[in-house]
Image 1 (spheres, rainbow, N blue to C red):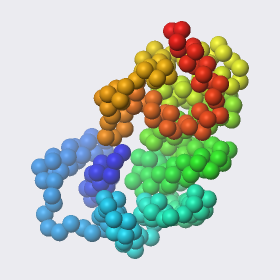
Image 2 (spheres, helix red, strand yellow; image 1 turned 180 degrees about the horizontal axis):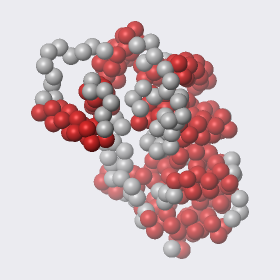
Image 3 (spheres, one colour; image 1 turned 90 degrees about the vertical axis):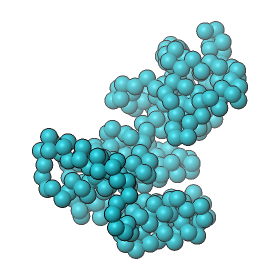
Image 4 (cartoon, one colour; image 1 turned 90 degrees about the horizontal axis):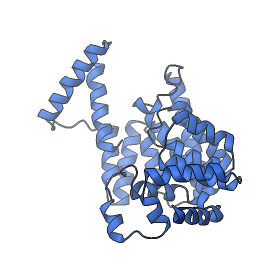
Amino acid sequence: MNRDTEKIFRELQKYLDQFGKLSEEETKEKIDEFMKQYNDKLVPDGPVEKDQWYYLDLAMEAEDVKVARKNAQKALTIDPYCTDAELLLIDLMDITPEEAKKRFEKLIKKTEKHLEEEGYFAEENIGSFYMINETRPYIRALATYMDDLIGLGKFRLAIRTGVNIIRLNQNDNMGIRYDLMALHAFMEDVSSAEGLLAAYEEESAGMLFPLILLYYKVDDYSKARKYLKLLARKNPDLKKLMMEELTDEDFDQNAMPFGYAMDTIGELMDVINRTMFLIDSSVGAMLWMKSELSKM
């Protein structure tokens, strides 16, 4: 979900809050009313409310680092628990990944304490954190922390963090399951990998590619070959990519400004970029894949 979409969701939530408790049908009607008003008049009457989100948006859009820092600090002045603003400030710092790790941990503890006090860790919210405006930044903070841990080679801690993210956000809008699958493959943890696959029942490259490497690593050629054939059938570009037959034009045609289309070169490149730590540890698997694909 991009920043513009989140802004719409924030405005929608504020609009709904003024009506109190609504039935499912009434909520749908109010959402339709809001979207009609939003589309009819994108610019609201009167001055724009300069809240923390206003300054955070300015910070995110700023091309100058000093301007970005200034607006992120303004957002924090208005709301000391604006987690996204703190994440941005950490990102703008010229610090090592180890120092960033310490700052992420401090921010996560601060955010957890605040959310617990506000009652967001109630049982009915667990599993839906990314769908709640107030807890979504916390999920982003955990995901950023997990990415930093992977970069530092702290794989077991990264796995624990990823498992916690999925516990809090079962729909996994951020694709943490793909990073987890790659981590399970790196650790040669077949049981956890199979459990994750069963939980999502998904045949995407993000799930299948690490599985191929995992089963090769544990010497199970039958399953490695099974998932390789499945991925090659779903994404014909896999063979071209592995055999180095893709041209710059092929990549340009699949380039997308936001994300990628499933079963394309774009999806494969995203998986490769996310799993370089696994690929670097699986040179034999990559050579075997190339050999097997040449026979197909």
